[in-house]
Amino acid sequence: MGSSKSRQLKLCREMISDQKWELSADRILIDEGLSAFSGANRAPGGLLYEFEKQAAAGLFKNGHVLVVEHIDRISRQGHDEVLPFVKKMTDAGVTVAVASGKRIYKAYERVTLGAVIEAVVAAELAREESDNKSKRLKAAQNERIIAAQKSAAEGQHISKTRTVPAWINVERISRLSEPPLYRMTLNEDRVAVLREIFQLTIDGYGTPAIAKKLNERGEPVWNHLERKSNNGWTVGYLTKIVLNRAVMGEYHPMNRPRSGKETSKNIAVLNHFPQAIDPVMFAKAHVGRQARKGTSGAWQITHNNVFSGIAKCGHCGGRMKQEVTVRKGTLRSHKSGRYPARQTFSYLKCHNALNKVWDESAGKLRCANRNWIRYEAVEKSVLDVAMKFVVARQDVASDSRTDALRIEIADRQRFIGAKQKQVENLVDSYSRTGSPAIERMLLQLESELIGDQAAVRELEMGLAGQSEDVSLEELEARLEGLLASIDSENEEERSAARVRVKQNLSRIITRMDCFDDKLTVVELDRAVRVIFDNDGNEVFNAYINETIHGPNGEIDWHPDFPDAEYEYAEVD
Image 1: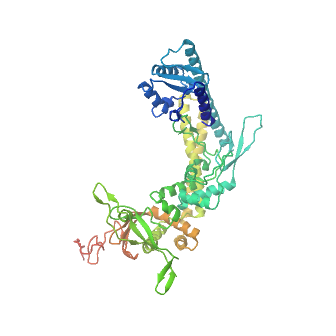
Image 2: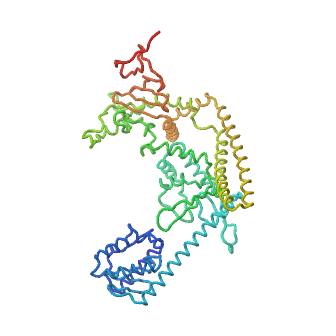
Image 3: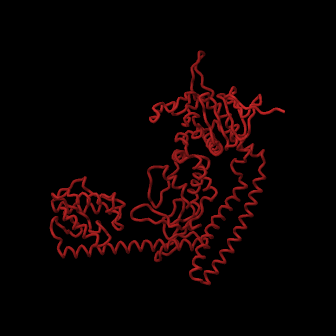
């Protein structure tokens, strides 16, 4: 409410002081965000609702006073709501006092005709004022939407308000004597940071890691309309940025009621704002966010365990936690003296077993898998197999030669979607009116749609041709460069590489289970199953749907159970 709350409290306290009433701090009722216009302030959940219920139950018969700044603070829905409330209170022993007019409706006393007329007039004026204000706000927003649609259709980025996204600059182009109009342009410095945020999201960084990176280097937080933030880059703000379709130039008007959550008007104005992020980058960022689901918070900062959120205990399904026992460079004791460790030694352990998590329903420990999996050995072996699988699927980061085509295709498809909605609306209007003007617009739009769809098909054919031009050798070279970077001495390069590796692993590893016999089972895209021992050696590798024959012709033979009873294949 801004200064409204302090003003109301001041007037009410002054009246309480003048009347020599006692004020108790725990009796101040403040229903922030609950509208008297809609009646939400008297609905269940509000403090006024609770007070009204207690009064009706007879809790205030010994003398209580309800002081409000103005009669419309009780309700702005008219006299037919205000007067019954006042009478209900006075009949229950509560005096109602209105600070703005020094009017007092005493408990157990009949409300006089003059007081009735005064209350009716005040309530009706308040209702009409609120109603007119609501209509003015809706009309102003509708005008903004129409103006935005018009300027976007003309290829201009014009706004009627200075309230725009933080990465956009505004310059007034109308005269001071005219209604304000602003030209919107991109703030290139902020757009560079914006694109970095999206690229980091695509590469697999979560918002905690991105916030840490920006704050550590002292990247200034965006101040907007002279409003400053002293909290640095936060997870909440970064999340809003990555989810905000305004980065692609879209304007989505919202209904903002006085109480309750805002809702969409289901209108999208494309190309209203200057485009800072292309649709392909926006979509990739969302894929990156989905791929990180289930990843621990520690991973967001350290990036050590590339199997975070992927590796599970083969017995209880709990997460496998990485524990470092020796870190590279730390001094170790030896009979010949102290020396720095040449490599890191760490292990994957079942979180449930390690912490002795108790299963109350079963009345026992949730997991007894106490064996440790050697992380470094398994990491190297799994990456060798998994990343080769990635290359075979040509699933490495897209080549720059195809990015431009993808961007153009995505942009055209967005505008095709918008035109299709316009066609549907015009068809509905034409069916009701039969207007020749609407018929001409409909035919024009349908012609444009046919041309746009044909152009997209051509672009898609070009994209397919470009993809075929990337050789297997080139993909393998990219992979080797990526794998060489995951153990780089440069911390930033190493973290970036591990994030990219984890992104790929999250997409293709559909199962990774660690068992108490120190075997790790990995399934790639539900197509290939590989089993590793604790030294990272491959002991099994086959297509999942393939029949595996043992050394003596055993069908579906498994190396873990060489002495089991198997059926045998017939040998010619």
